[in-house]
Length: 310
Picture 1 (tube, one colour):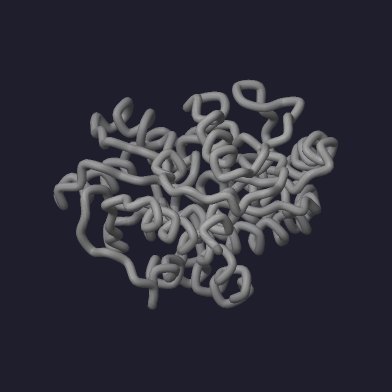
Picture 2 (spheres, rainbow, N blue to C red):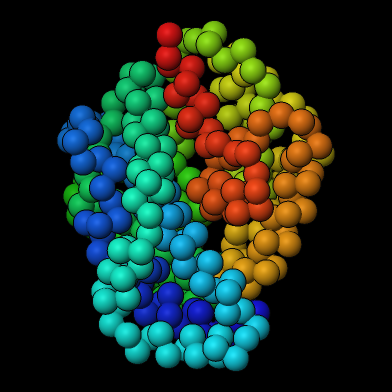
């Protein structure tokens, strides 16, 4: 395990200097909308929180963290904070495979297609789409989280944004629970799958739905995607630990201890594999960590988007 303070200091420093945990300029991270027909005005703004965009970078960086965890060289990670954030971020961007970036950009494009098919009056403003800062809160840097969250909420409020459509549980929890509690700013927030509204009988399959902790334990949203899939003729097979009793994928621990994260992920995958059906995740962190454990897993948006095909 790495010294938690060393990791927190690096992440907090990057967020403070660049507004994201990896120091990568946002114009390099957030490119999924390029060349994709997106409305610029509407009733509610699609807010990705950059979480899906971050996954390829998370997977690349945690490979190095796993390599040096509990080694002599791992003790030197604290010095990473002395490297300019944008410089280290650019380096990480260069070594992260382009096909992985494209894959996760495709997930967000699927979500946009789903909203369009559901006749949702939404729009997208990449200049207003920022990281929520939720990892700072998870790691105990409440002061850093509050400062960043005020910045994010302030931009949205200044632009007159009142309604947000989210795509992942971490950002959703931050906006619904943490922003009002710690920043005093509230928005009308809905997840994209709560807005699915189209008919299709193209499903004809069984899947194993993994409930992420925030949707299952804290936001009470586990039944919504199940109903969406059922209505699309996709049957969700029962999972031993689900809903409010769902088990963690291990992802939240990967920045402090990749070994622990892998152990937790392996245990969860063993549970999910008992069903014998394709695993479906609805969280970018769960998706990445279950993949790391060897899961045959796809994103919820992919399954829903497939039902759009004739």
